[in-house]
Image: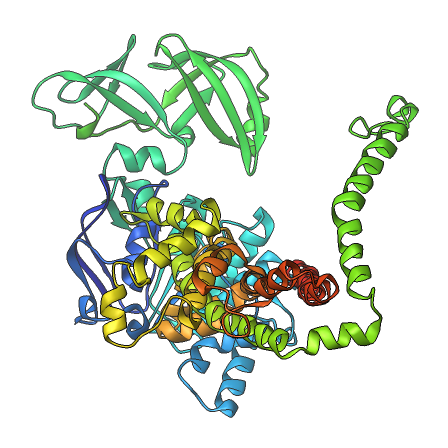
Length: 348
Length: 280
């Protein structure tokens, strides 16, 4: 099922949640809508599910106009952030709900629910009440419930947002494996970049009701379309600069950049922490800096630096190996070279 | 740790003598204003022996009043259940023009004296009222008849179900209903399979409050019913008639029925409140 969104605008009072959004989700793909809160990603999901109506624009499932279909006719599976399990029904009846309202025969209901409970690895919990389950279990039941009537698309709204970090990580990779098994077109809303990158085939970066960029995780990370995407995906050092054709002057330092500005103007230069190289010895063009703090972090070290020549503080990330070679301590004098400096037109 | 243990009482707990005085005061007040009067009713009702009590409550007029009271409640309560659920639904679910006004209006019957409520109906439907001539031309009797009693009862018991449900439905939110719709439920299936079970205990609680009030109402019903003995007198009105005729023992005997209804509703409320707590 291919999802096509054409020119959708949605306002709540004076707030524009979605501003002329167009998007295509190819059949069988798992796409993440990634953006800060208020970027419109949940509104888009609710419009696709039929819980909200767009003010303008339309959405299609394989060419069928959704404007003519109510929520119950669309047959989408929707998973809520806070599960929204029916508190008065046990796990079995929660999963069976979509089949019960369709008046399916009892034997079929039993077979399907059993199959789904196996799929989400919670067989044997059918008679528990939702309040007796852990958060991770509840979310898996919510997913089983959403899949019961064999939906045409699966929509997940911040599905792991309410869970603690470890359960979240487990469910992420589990969701990815599940998707590889059932290949259902899936749209997945999150504000967590790691989550989007780990789970999705493609990432749709949204901000202020607009789509900023669509691409694979690698594409949007390596080739951000604009300064918002650059800043939103991971940490970045932002330096005020005077920009000209192929140069950027940051403080006393001149950097080579790829830039096609017509005339010199003020702007910003973006450098990722892992693109800051640290050396003990001075080399040609290196920038003098002083270490202010060294923090072990995940797979490496986070190093906070102050560079008077740039008129700014910087962050550099180095891996363990490089970190132990350098053996940096707070207050050490070092020399930096910036492997890559990016400039965006909108940054002016 | 050691310092904390050195202080035996939590800072929020009062010394024992304060507790004893506060609890004692509470008990004295409840005793004086609740237990003693209720006991008086029972003692006075039984003052001429158990057979006199039996005669008083099996008197045809008393039975007729009991029937009328139950009938008014049986009509008024379902009406208020339907209205209360609809109003609470609208208020909890939607933001619309006049929402604040509706919330205020629901409380109106609690704010105005029941006597005034009764008078309003007399002014509307009475012989010299706004709709009186039209009604009498069509042979419909509202005032001094059952319809008037039902109207007055409905009016004064109007807020109970809605007021019980509005905060409950606002707290529960609407996500489960949304889930039901997306899962393919029709609006009616959503209501009966999701909403109703969610609000079940709150609704029952409201129904009990509503019923107790419907059967105990005096002021509004007194104004519209004309208080015709054996025809339009409900239990509370019948008590008044007997009392005014110096039939104290009979008056208290009938009054004891109202006390029983009241106590039964209290017990029902306790049970429902406990089930509700367990359910959440």
